[in-house]
Image (cartoon, rainbow, N blue to C red; front, top):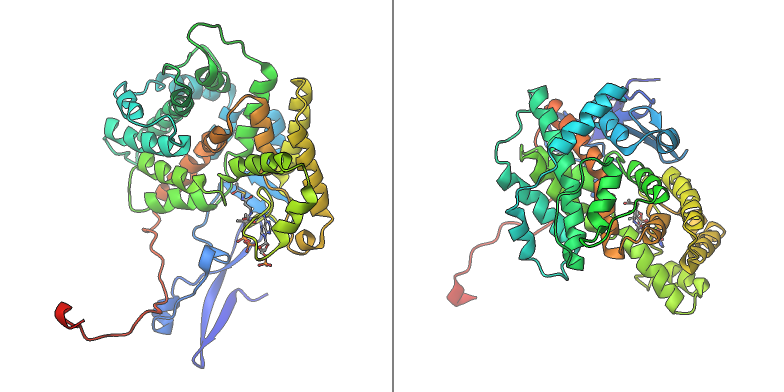
Length: 428
Ligand code: ACO
C-alpha cells in the first residue's frame, strides 16, 4: 500500500504523507496543504473527518463498539478498577501500584480545601441557577484564588496542579447541589474514599448522620469511570483548544464544563430523563414519540440516541443498562421510567429509520435512571458527568501542553460580501 495520498488541485498533483496510528488507523497529513497548493484549505463542519491531534490516551472504534483507556478495555476497568485508579491511569499513562494510589489519594485529600471566599461567589447566585453554570463559574474562579500558572515543563508542578483540581472539584460539585437545596456548605470528610466523600458532601444534613450505601457508592464509582474520557469530543476539544492559547488549567476546564452542558453533549442525560418523564405524563405512548423523532418537520429527537462516533453500539451504554437493572433491584426501586426507556430502545432497535442511520442508545440513555435511583436531582446529572470527565480533560490538557501543540486556530472559507465602498451615515 502507498504511504502517500495524492490530491489534484487545478490540474496539479500534490502528495501528502499517510500516518498510521498504533491501531492501524490512517490519517492524511495535510500540514503542508496551504503552502504547497497556494492557499487551498479543507472544509469539514463539525470536524467529522478531521483529526485535531495525535493522542495516546483513549482509543475507540465506533464500528466495533470498542473503548479503551491507555490500552485497557472499558469493560475491565469498569468491573475491576476504582475511579481514582482510572484517573491516575488516564493522566499519567500507567495504572498506579498500591503505594502510588495511596499517595495520589492522600495528596488529593490534602488539597480538598476551597478558599472560603468562594462561598461569597456562590452566595451571589440565585437558587434557581443551573448547577452547570455555577460549576463552570466556580471552576474559573479557582484561577483567581490560585493565580500562579502551571509550569508544564516541571513534572512536580503538573502533579501538584492535578491533585489540586481533583481535590477541590468534588467540593464545588457538592456545593452546587447544596446551594440549590439551601444546605450549609462544608468541606467533606477526608477519612472517606473519594466517591464516598462526594456522596456525603452532596447529601449529608447538618442534624443527621449520613449513612453510606455501598450499592450507591459502587454504582457511582462505575458511572464516573465510564464517563472519564472519550477522546476528542466537544468538551475535550474545547479544553484542548482553550489550553492551546496557554490559558491555565482551571480556565480551560471551566470552558469544557460549558461545552459539556449542551443537550447534544453531556446535557443529554438531563434531557433524556425529562423526555422519559414527558412521555410518562403523556400516557406512556412510546410509538407517538418514535414518530415525532422520525418526523423531519418536528424538532424532537430521541435524546440518548445516536452518537457521532459509535455506529454499532456504545459499549458504555451496555454496561450502564446492566447497572441500571442491578441498582434499581438492589435498592428495591420500581421505576416505570426504566420500562419506558427499555420500550423505546426495543422499538428503535427494530425501526428502519434508526437502523438505517445506525442510531443506538448512548451512554446517557440509562445513566439518568441510575442517578435518579441514587437520589441525585435531574439538574445535577450533567454535573456528575463533569465530575467523571475531569480526569480525561486533565489528561488531554496535559498531553496537549507536553506535546507543545500549536494554538488551535481553524481557517474558514469566506462567503460574505466582496469589497464595498463605504457610504457615510447621512447617505444611507
Ligand atoms: N433522534 C432522531 N433522529 C436522529 C437522532 C435522534 N436522537 N440522532 C440523529 N438523528 C438523525 C438525524 O436527523 C440525521 O438524519 P438525516 O440523515 O435524515 O438528516 C441522522 O440521524 C444523522 O444525524 P446527525 O445529527 O447528522 O449526526 P451527528 O453525528 O451530527 O450527531 C448526535 C450526533 C448529536 C449525538 C445526535 O445523534 C443527537 O442529537 N442525539 C441526541 C442527543 C444525545 O443523545 N446526545 C448525547 C451524545 S453522547 C455524549 O455526548 C456524551
